[in-house]
Every structure is written in structure tokens, then in C-alpha cells.
Length: 522
Image (cartoon, rainbow, N blue to C red; front, side):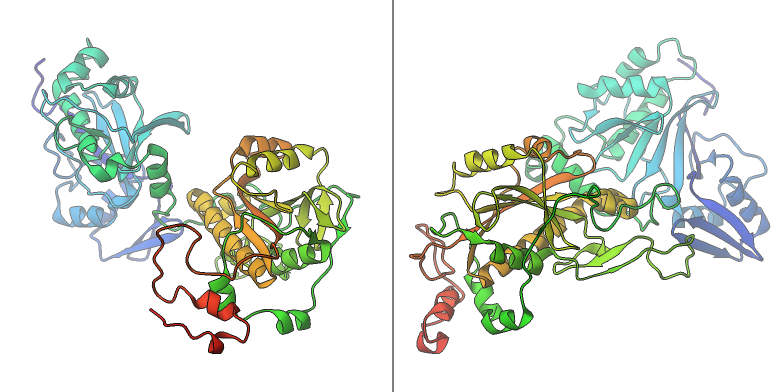
């Protein structure tokens, strides 16, 4: 197919993203995308007008040989290119067919070169990356990958049809014959631009040329893990996404009025200061236990454990009025608890399933960290049954207590968007460590489990909506057996070599203290 020079060869145009705002302030042009502003001073009026026009209409990408002349606009001016390179992360790029039809839009996710990748050879076969993700977003279809610095918004049926052909290797010529036969706006050059774009943005690869299958690191990544790793770090700071759109979730999970409560005993600080072992002893003695003593955990011990690990120590209400940048009052309720929580959000919830506990009936309870009380969960016998069945497969005995940790993740996502789930997993980790240290100091037998064996079953048994409250982890607790050996830094398994003072825990627990058990340190 022959065309006039430049026509139909895949023109690329550039404009500001839809959420970018520009305004003049004296001689300054302010480019704002929440929460940051970029101030441009000393720009010639023609250049200012060109930039302001980018907020309304795209212009040909500077330096694009396929772009037709644009009278009245300094598209190739060096100053314009410098400014656009500085603001390239705020710009979207369009790939167009002849006649001005937009095939797709390139939306940066992080730093992205102003110029787009060059076309691929028309006879070069490409296929989609196994990390590529095609999904619906805002009424359109988008193509993205955790390896790519941008996502493609496929605005045209032809672009969508072409991408769907790339499960197997296809050339630009192949795609033209499948996606655009008889379409006057499409040429081999346009498809070469498209395939070059996919390769250059790591959305596709050329088979047999050192691709994903030949890279040992990439071969060991699963799609969902790499996507989670890429999206759980913010590409830029953001204001709360749902400010003035949705109300933030309350700091403490509410219960129905009149719900039954079981008040828990509260420990005395003086007793803890007198009886607790030093921090070094606790750290060196910490271990996971898989067998338990004959006596059950007492209600007093359970109350102390929850009080020291998860209670609300203090709280701060949200601001009553609208948001102002200068107002330092919080946008949402915050609490202080014994374990760290981002911005005092503390979205984690604790459910305690009792197998045996002196003074407390067997069953499942939700822990109210504000009142320091247990609220029975109705019709929850299945949790106890599942605990006994699942845990007995790798433990020597059934623990006294199972603590199920869930997350009201909307507490986080209201403010932190894409990184909310990563944050809540970090919070689970620090909560588990806090539980380990407190249980060790109390002389109990703790053990965190590797995830949740059947989260769907646990969610159903607890009567939760999995989109509002996500089951994250489980933690076991019981009493220690009388014949338990002194703690050691060397696991009870063959082949472990002690290094770096592995005997500290044993020495610290030896009667008379470490001074009477001075072994040789390594």
C-alpha cells in the first residue's frame, strides 16, 4: 500500500495527562499534578501558549519524522523539547493512523523518555510478554506489565484486535492482514510503529533473542508476584484518592448495639516491670513452638497477651471540616497501639478461636482493642474444627488459641491507593513479631503460620466480606511443656552449625545468669 510521505506512517502526538492543570501566575507557568507543582519561569509567550495548548489538544511529538508540519507552533524548538523532557512523566503520547484516528495512548507509570521507541522491522515476529496484563479500566482496555514504564490505553478496535493476536509470534505484516484489511488508515508502517512500541516498552518480546525464557531471574518470577512488587511502591506521591468522595473507615471496627462482650483482665505495669526478662533474653529465646503443656492458657494470660500486643493506647479524631493544605489535623481517625502502624491507621483486626482456655468457653471471638474485650462471633464452630484438622497435620498437638489476623484494607487504600496491600502485609509482620516477643516474655509457646491454608473457608466461617476484610495470617498460642529444653539459637534439626553466639539464649536462661554459664563465643 502506497501513501504520501508521512501520511499513515504512524504519527505520534503528545499532550498533558487529563489530571494535569496549568495556570499563569505573573510571568510563571505553574504545571500542577497533585500533590506537586512545577513552576516554569522566563518562558517566551509563544512557548507558554504552546504548553497551555497541550492541556487541550495534542501536538505532534517534537522530532517525530512522521509528523506533518504544524504552522504557528514551535514544535522543534530546542526550548520546547527541554521543557517537555523535564515534564515527560506528565505527558501522554498518542499513536495515530492516517486521518487522525488514535490507535492507542501511552500513559507513563514512571520516568519515560520523551521520544517513543522506534518502529520494528516489518518482518520481525513478536509476541506478548508473559507478564503482560490486558484489563478494563475507565471504559477502555489497557495493556500493562510490571516490567513496563507505561501502560497502553487501546482506544481503537484495530489496536485491540492486533494485541489479541500476539499470544503467538506475529510480524507487523501479519497484524496488518488480520487487524486492518481494507482499512485506509492502516499501513505496514503503522503496524511497525505499534510492534516497535510494544517491544521498546517491554510489553512484548522477539522470540529467540535473549528474551524472558533465557533470563534466569525472569524465569523464576511468577506474573502475580512481579506485578505486586512493581505496583506496591508508589511511582509518585498522592493525596488521598477518596477525599470528599468516600468517608474513611472508622479507626475501631464497630459492633452492633448490644453485642455481648467478655471483659478481659488487664495486666499491672508494676508486675511486668518486676517479672519480665530483659529484652536480650526475650530476643535470644524467641522460637516457634509446635507442642504444648498439659495446662491450658488462662484468661488472665490471654488478657495480658492481647493488652500488650494490640490494645488501643490513645486515639485522635479526624478533622471536622474540609481539607486545607495548611491544616495539620488528620484526615482520618488515628490510634496508637503497641505495634507500628502507618500514620496510626491500624487496620488489622484480631479473631481469637479458643480450643481450651481456663475461664473462657470454647468458641471464636473478635477482639475489641478499645474496650479490651472479646465479642463472640455467632455460628462460628467451623473455625475451631478447621483449626484442629489443619494444624494437627504438622503440629504435635492442638494449640490452646488460634489468633486469625484480618485487614480492613480500605482504612489504608482510602489514603494510599496501590500500596495499601503491601503496607498491610508489613503491618502483619510487625504484629507477629510483637506477638512473638510478648509471648516469649510471658513464658508462652507462640508460632506464626505460613499464611492461611484456606482463606476462603476462614472468611466464610467468620462471616466476613472478603473485599472489605481480608484474611491475612494466623498465630498459634499455648502453654509450654514442663520438659521443654532451654532455648537455643540452633534449631532442633540435624546439620545446623552454630555461629555468632548461637548459645546466648541458652546462657541467658541458665540458672544464675549468663555470668555462671560463660561459654566460648563465636
